[in-house]
Image 1 (cartoon, rainbow, N blue to C red):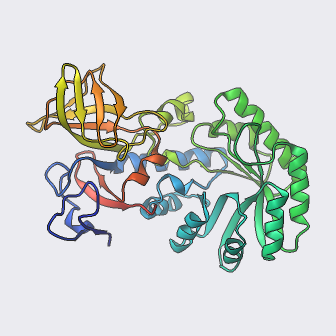
Image 2: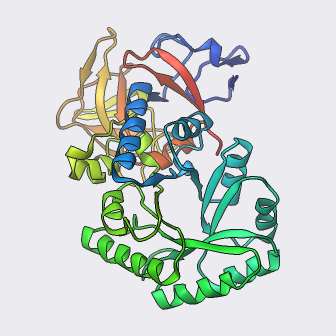
Image 3: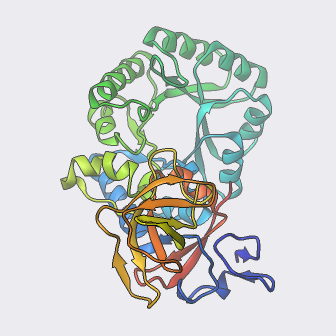
Length: 382
């Protein structure tokens, strides 16, 4: 049972400790909650899980969603129960958490240079994968001296990690394969930092060339913006294609609302935004200006500002936000809005942009139904 106390932002428990049983069944607007608070809407989450599982089944691909999006045990468990092949991690600490949660198959989507972690991973009864993209990575594998399953990572000029050419990737693969107990299972990469469809397609074609040159049963790619192109360009290149999209589980009102493949190809399905941040109007100091109590500490701002959706009036009646309303900027604890008709004390419901930098701001997140009755509490492990 999740322990909730006075340290949990968004909960109002000044007189002591509580647990999730103390809030389940309560209503968001008359329960032990304070502002701002981020909530996750269960019907939207369940819809998104089903939509992505159906998409993968329809196209014959696997899904190892990126756990860094939520780092929430209940959501990771839900992804596995909906058919996920495994869970992706970005760091050794995330992989450790996945292990402690009992995730049976983990893909660490980075080159692993820490010999201690390589030896730890090899000592356990699970299916663990990591990357290698350099001879330095091969040297770490050699120093560890333990069995390992690795992908050769393929990058692109100006991008992040990964071999820049097929020739380089083949050289790294041959060096890694020469080590006792090291299995090169295929190639992997991440296309999400590219900004246009043509650039993504060109990069994925390079991945395909590398996969054919290196061999191996698996190829993996696919963030949350271009997984349709991954399926189009990489299906059939290896025995198994593994997507790593993570943001689908809650979607958003900004970055992925605009860039999701389901937005481009609506016949494939739809995703629903599940995360909302409710904040109180603190001031209306000038004509056309409203200040709400949610800022950079509470909402993501790296890939778009939050979007005002609705206002809950002092009478408890909810209305849609005015058409021209927008967040102009954020301070640490304040949102500066223009064009919103609201008075101090009213509540503003914000949609967010980019789930990956929303979850890490909240230790406990109420899960609500469409009527804002609390059904559960998500705990995050950041």
